[in-house]
Amino acid sequence: MKFKKSYLIDLSILLVPLIIMIIVTPYLPEKVPIQWNLSGGVNRTVDRGYAFLLGLIPF
Image (cartoon, rainbow, N blue to C red; front, side):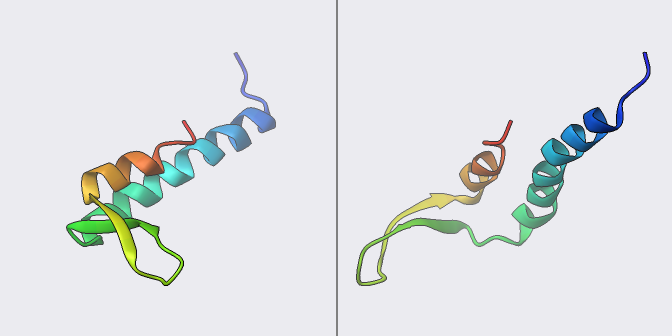
């Protein structure tokens, strides 16, 4: 079966976030802020592994 150009574009759109998260995750701090209040303070933090899972949401 021959891949169409649109399939390759779709596949690359899915793979780019995964590749970026694999590269960036080791450089993230242990705790990553994911929620801030109106005054700019951090309300919620998660471990970097959970931040990696957030990067997989497009899948």
